[in-house]
Length: 51
Image 1 (spheres, rainbow, N blue to C red):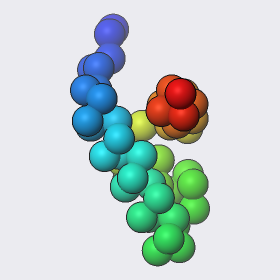
Image 2: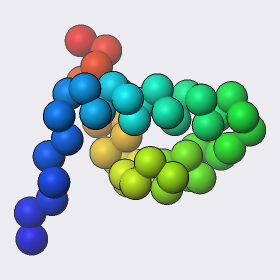
Image 3: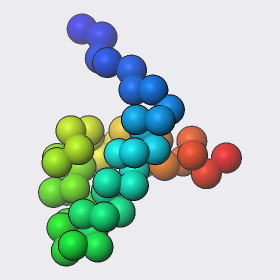
Image 4: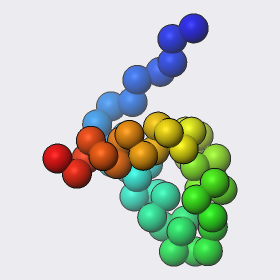
């Protein structure tokens, strides 16, 4: 089963959402759950955006 591919704009938006959630006191696990991605996906996206 293939997953949905996020557009680059959506990836950036979700990465920012995680930062906001962390600022509000959410744990990383809670933040990933709220944006609907796995921890592995989050870290892969973050690494891609660093380039």
